[in-house]
Image (tube, rainbow, N blue to C red; front, side, top):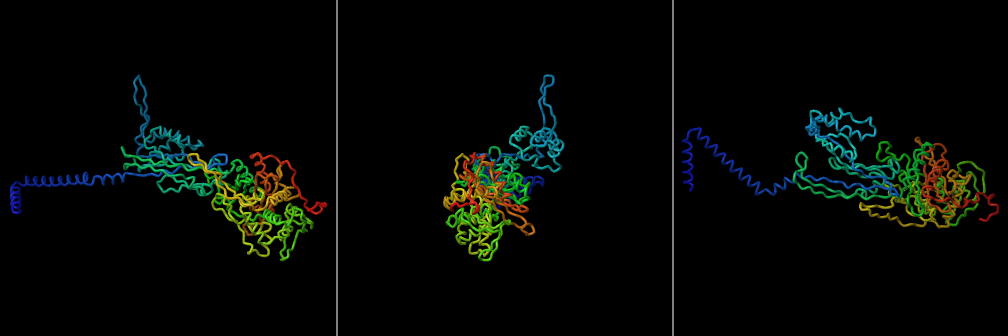
Length: 635
């Protein structure tokens, strides 16, 4: 067989070699073409038959793109359902500077009974004429409307044209529909979801703010950075969806391809306990006090007695979450939960409550009260102003806020007993309010107290509490001695409208109902004429409260500034709201009665109107303050 093949090949070569040169070359070329054609057929068969399915799948995978559609973020609402934060569909408008050159602005006109097309312009210049008036609609200040020639230059681009250049950002869906209706090739949308805060800085510290944390090229992903936006981020965010489709090299969807859409789920809405109007009133009162007294900052909280619902929670210089750049970053959080302060004489209420609870004093127990006193361990204490030595009742000591009388009352309790009451009132422990970065406050164990701090802790120094802790603390006295955990969130409402109410922690009795009522009666003396809290009085209502003042260092470390505090409840005979006010770093003497008490009065006046609280029908309760006032009455 090999010999026959060899003979055949020799005969073929012989005959080919016998041909003239040009004919011989043609035969060789035809032979090579046949071999190449045979190779192509084999290769095509391999691609179309043997590996067709694998290649088709690979090509589809290459063309297939998947896009995440982030779930629309849920709303944050006040107690009445008013929107504090929401998400709106918005658009950015861009231009493909290559495609727009094909634009033709034409219209059909009639001349001499004949209809014909009239071309008004072409390309970027013609598009600018149509587009400029619509873009002007998005400008609040019409003087900022873009000029047609300037817009034409942007649309046209330079020698190197881009496939996408921003033309206008942040326009409404309605305006985009008008722009889209122009049918200008190359004018393309970029849809996104924008977080909107319709009330500006009202409740800004509570609501918080979001930021886009998406990767480059992805749809915007909003994530809470502070406030309820952060603490309830997972609840608000919802469930992401996804679009999967096949696209061509230029980004267009492949005709005939299958597009699958996995729908996302809107985030749940969070309904707060906050009353928006009350929040606004309290914000104005705190900001005014900070400005008037040249203070560093202020904060306040209004708590509904018996439920622990926070009706208002304010920090001075509250930011507008939509315009954070307008407010210093140090004001973006909430000092009401993050900044503990020494409350001064506001802290005396714990000492009074403990002494009453232990039956060590009554409101009319008498003490000899000088303006300076030296205790058994050699520590010396002074009152804020000089006064004659008097025989005063416990109620009078509270009304006048005399340290020299208070340390005598506190001395009747052991350090361990007082520490136990301080902690039971929530000092040194987070309230659990639904805001991030809440501080514990500052409270050292009684075993760490030295000879002086064992006394200073009796009158609100040597320990520190946040504004919300002070609000919870005064609400305990107002609520018959029972602590109900304070909270900002009423409920969560899912995308289908199902509402799940907030589960509040267990209540805890701190002092007896009798001690609570006695404290409220004694605290009414604080707002009487001649007392420290007279400026907290609200016409027609009995107020039970307590002022406080403590020293704080200035920028040079000198104790030239004050922290002014006031806590109070109204109406005193049947408390419905408890309010705590802190104004930090005020200049001068800045007593709590002069700085913080007026804030209580301003917001309290609005509270009774907003909540429809009826005026007091009982006279303001008054214990005698001195022995001479008692005139023989029994203790």
